[in-house]
Length: 454
Image (cartoon, rainbow, N blue to C red; front, side):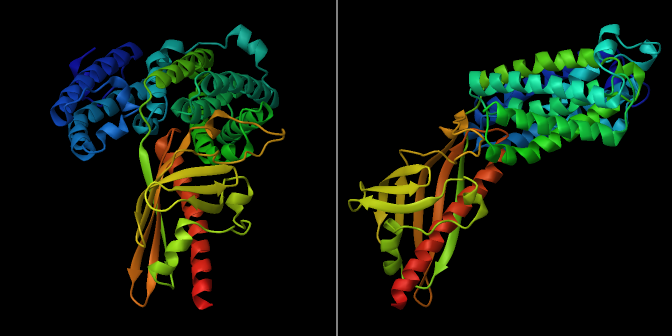
């Protein structure tokens, strides 16, 4: 180890020096961030916050805190790229793989792999292990089949552990598992012989598709949720397949596949367990939709507080099982009244908090039905995410007078979901809630304008 390792782009670095420098730099960076967090937000900063930031606590100070974090991280980013490129060079892998340094979670796996893979010169005469050579056929179809079988078994084990044991839909399940499926399938497929890039990606995607089918057959999940997760899982499986393809280019790295597989099969459940114990509270999101109605607010108001039966949905989203509103009824008048909004899967109970006729109707939510009816080959399944993972916290209708006796009706929902990565699943939840808003607002518009015309 030399201090010039931290800034010199020349030459290579061995796995031992790379691993030690990486751990030392992380320890230094972590303690710097602890001081910054205490100075900026007067709060402790824990190591797992890098993967699971405490979003609600940091909302007010996010801009200031993370701007300082970024400035403090710049020298570490430079040094990290230097070390990774020199380490990649020693293994004989493409330099562009250094970009994985910026991919959350994947960068941890990548650091771990770079810390254990030997330099090319160390293993120039390495041969495949006898046991693995006998188990994995040289024939590409047979090798791919072994990889698929291994991944089906691993999906059953890891998904059961995360969903049934931990009741957790997090980074380990939606990010770690698809990436590992793509990587392990390619490592097994290419163990005996170097394979083409296209065939490696095809095997990675086939492994992920078979994993989804396994979850359906084993009654872990329905079709709708897996379709929603498919873009994320497919992209990560491709990324894992690319990494696997790069590792199998040279025999000296290809024959280390059993070591990498062992590390993944140990590391993934450990990560899931840590994620479960340090999981941050779910952030609260807001979705707002508006529509203009050709009627004054006083005519719109009665149809806001309660509305009659909506026609059957024609939107594809609702026809495949997503819960949709059917009618709304109210008991009482003013603050304290209870609005009952009935969906296809059950009813939301909505105690009225603000009754400002004909301007604002605001309510909290004390009971949430299931967010969807799953498509499944069985009579019914009830995965944990159907209860308590997408929660509406409250809602509001705001009637804004417009010129010409018109009204802008705004519908707002405050909600939480307990699925990670938060941003990915927020795209889906915002889209679904927006469609629900439009269904209700359009119905109110049609009823009100019809009443006004008559």
